[in-house]
Amino acid sequence: MLSFCILILGLWIIFRDREGVFRLFSVLILAGLIGLITQKYLQSSDYTELSLELAKSLFFLAAIGYLLQFLKQSSIAQFGILFIGLYFSWGLNADSKEASTVNSPLPDQNGEFLIQIEKRNLSDVTTWSYALDAKIKRAFHPSQPDITSMDDYYILDIKQGTYEEIASKLASNTQIEWVENNEVIPFEFPAKSGTTTKDELNTLSNDPSVALQWHLQHLGMSKYFNYFSEKALKPTKKAKLFILDTGIDKRHEDLSVNSINAAQDKQGHGTHCAGVAAAITNNKIGVASFAPSVDWVEVHGIQVIGDIGFGTQVDIINGIIQATDAGADVISMSLGGITNQEREKAYNEAVRYANQKGTIVVVAAGNANLDGKRYSPANAENVIVVTSLNQNDEKSGFSNHVSNIAMGISAPGENIFSTTPSNTYTPYSGTSMAAPQVAGLVAVIKAIRPELDTKKIYSILSRTGKETKNTLVTGKLIQPYEAIQLLIAE
Image (tube, rainbow, N blue to C red; front, side, top):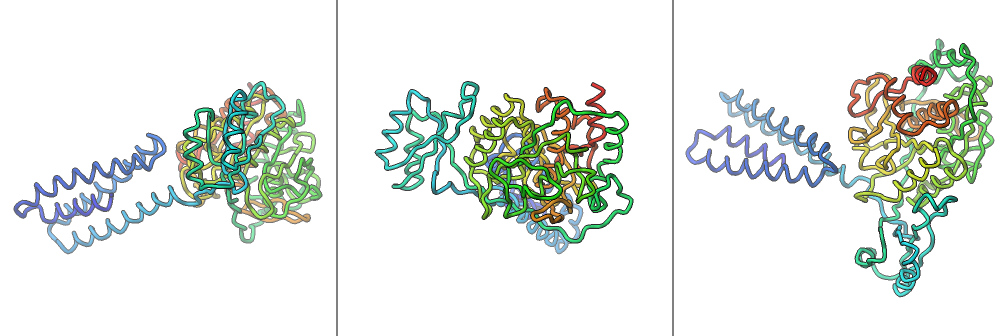
C-alpha cells in the first residue's frame, strides 16, 4: 500500500498541470492513505507499534514528495526518484510481511492444544474428548496449586479430524475456559563467532582466558570485582540460578552445576550460557563471570530444548514450574520464537507463579531483528528481556528490539567467549549470550537482597544503566558495578 501511495503521489506531482489529473489523483491519494493506515493497523500488535510504523511510512512518503517537487524542472530526474522510492518501499513492505510470517510455529503433533479446564468441568470435557478420539492429560504439576491455576491446564492430543476442525470445536465448547496452541519452537542457535581478539590489558581475574572476554572489560568489571574485595561483601544466601536450555555439561572444569535433568549438553548452547552467567571466577581455569566466587551463585540446569534443537511451549513452561518449585532465585531462558498467539495466557500464569515464589525470570529478546513483542516468552508479563549490543553500544543487527517491552535491558552479545562441552571454550553471538549476563548479575543481586522482586531489580538495572546509541530499541546497557553500589547504598 505504501508503494501505491508513492506511485499516485509521484504521478500527481509530475502530471498535476494536466487537465483532470488533480481531481482524479487527489481521490486516489486519499484512498491510498486510508488503505495504508488500515494495513498498518492490522499488522501492528499495539498502538505504539502502529504509531512508529505510520510515522516511518509517512516520513518516507513526505521525503519522496519533497524531492519530486524540488526536481520539477526535470521530468527524467522525477521519474528516477519515483523509481527509487518504489524500490525502497517494496523493501519496507517485504520487511513488514517477514515480521508476520518468519518462523511461524506449528503445534506439537503429540499434543496440539493446551487447554484450561475448571475442575468442575473436567469429567464432561474428558468424555467429550474421548468422543473425538482425542487424548487428554494434565500438562503441569505445580507444588503449590493453591496459588496458581497452572494445574488446570491440559494437553489435548488429537488423532482424527483436522487441526482446524478441532480448533473450531474447542472454541465453541463453553466448558473449556482457555485454548492456545502447544507450539513447537525451533531453537535459534547463535552464530559461532570468528577468532576472538585478545585484550592483554584485561586482567580482571587469574582465569587464563579472561583476556578473550571483551564484554567484561566493556562492562567495567574491574571496578565490580574490586568493590566486592574492598567492601568485603558476603552473600546473604547462595542464589540459585536455573538455566533452561539444551542442558549443561555437568563435568566441565570451569562450572559448578547441579542438574535436574541436564547433566549433558549435546548442542553446547546451555553450557555456553551457564559459563557466561556463572563460570567459576578466580580459579585459574578458563573464564570469569558475574559471580565473584563459588560462594555466590549455584547453577542448575533443566533441559527444555531437545538434542535435535526443538522444544514445545509445554516443555518450557514445565521447566519454569520445575525451577520455581526447586527454589530458583533466577531463571535464565535464552530461547523462544515468533508466536501465532495473540496472547499466551499459560506463559503469563507460569511467570506469575514464579514471581509469587520469589523467582526472577530473564529472557533473551530473540535473533530475528523484529519486535520482541512478537516473540515468546519474551512477550510474557513481568519478565526482564535482554537485547544484544556490539562493541560500539549499538543494537546487533540480528537482535530483536524491546521498544514495546515493559522491562527491556541490554548487554554485549557479539563474540562472547565462554564454556562449551568437554572442557572447551568458544565464542558465540546472539541475544542468547546477552541474557545470561543479566541473569548472572541478577543472581548476585538476589544473593545480597533475596527479598527483591522483578520490578525493584529492573529499576536498579535501569537507573544505573548506560544510554546506548539507540536506547529506545535496546534498553539501557547494564553497569554491574554501579548496580551493586546502588544496591548496597539503598
